[in-house]
Image (cartoon, rainbow, N blue to C red; front, side):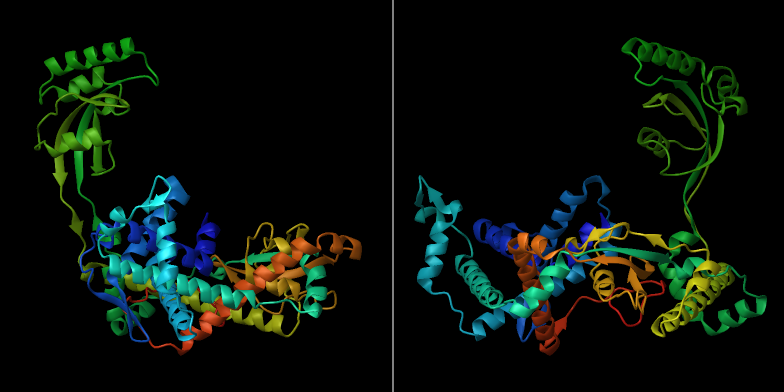
Length: 506
C-alpha cells in the first residue's frame, strides 16, 4: 500500500494527466462549483512571476486526495497522507507543470483559436444528438478563463510530445540494454534499523540536569507538539448492569433479554444498584457490584457515551441497547481533562530527549563506520553477526520488472545492484528505504541467450524507450526547476528524528 502511494507521489506523468483532468472538470462545471475553500483569490506560489492561485491548488489537491481515498478505501488515514507530505508534493508538481507550460509558450508551441474551437466542439459534454450544442456552451460561467486554461494544456501537451518523440536509443545503447534489461539476478540483502539496534542506556541525573538548563526551548517545543502525551483524558467512574444478548440472537431471544432488563430497571434505585448488579448482571464486573472503575471518555460504545453525557454524579441512566446487550449505568464520579504543567514534566521530557540524542548519535556513528568499510571494499560480516542480522536472499528475479522480491520497487537499490559484478559483489554504500538501510550483495547474474533476447526485442525496446523518456523528462524538469524563480508559500514539515542518509534523497 505504501509503495503504491509513493509511486503515485513520484510519477510526473500521473500529475500532468491529473492536472488535465482537473482542467476539463473546471471547464465543464465552472471553477466556482469546484471549491468552497476560503481565500480562493490568494496566491500559493509564484513561478517566474506567474501566480498559482489558492483555488487552483485546492482543486488539484482535493481531487488527488479523493484518488487516494478510492485507492486505499478503509485504510485511508490522514496521518499517512501527512507523512507523505501530499500538499507539498502537489504544489511542487503544479510548479513544474507551470514551468513546462511557460517553456511551451517560449518555444512557440501556440494553439490557434481554430484548434481550440475544434477541441471544445469535440468535448462530449457539449454534444446533443451527435452535434455541438452552442447554446449549452454559451451558458458556461467564466468561459474566457477556462478557454485560456484549456489552450495552455493543449500547448503544454504538444511541447511535451515534441520533447519525448526526440528521445531515441542509439544502436550501441540498444545492443547493451536489450541484454541487460532481460537479465535475471539474485541478491543477498541485510535490512538494518540502526535506531532499533541502539543500546538502551539511562542518562545520569547530571546529564538530565545539564540538558534541562541549556535546552529549555527544545523541551518547550517537545511539550507543545506532544501535548497529548501529558494530558489525562476526561474519565468517569461508573457501575453497570448488563443483560447480555448472544451473537446473532433471534428476535425472540432479544425480546426476552429486553424484558429481563426492564424488570431490573423497575426495581432499581441508586441505593440498591450495587446489590442488583451482584445478583442479576451478566457483566464481568457483577461480583464487584457492577463497579467498572475509572474509564476514559470516548472508549465506550456510542450509545453508552451519549447516555453518560446526560447523567450527573449519582444518577442512573435509562435502559440502553447496544450490540453487547442492554445496559443500565450509574455514574459514581467523573473528572475533566487534565493537562500536566510543563514544569511538572520537564525532567521527564529531558530524560527522553537525552536518551533519544544518545541513540541517534550511536546510530549515526555505527552507520558511518559501516559505510566506511563498504566504501573501502572490506567485509562487514562481523558487524552483522554482532548485531544478529542475517543476510537473506531475494530469489531470482527479472531486472526489467523493477521489483526486488522481499524489498519492493526501489530504483536506487536496483541501480546499485546492476553495478555489482562477480569481482565486486558487495555494494559500496547503504541504501535507505522506508525507515531502514539496506546492504546488498550479488549472488548471481544471468543474461539470456541471443535468440531469447531477439525474441523479446520489440517489447523490450518499447520499455527501454519509455523508461528513457521518463528519466529525460524528470531530469529536464528538475534542471528547469533549479534555474526558475519560485516563491513557495507552503512551509516544509520536519521529518522527525530518524537517522536519514546525508547524501541521498529519500
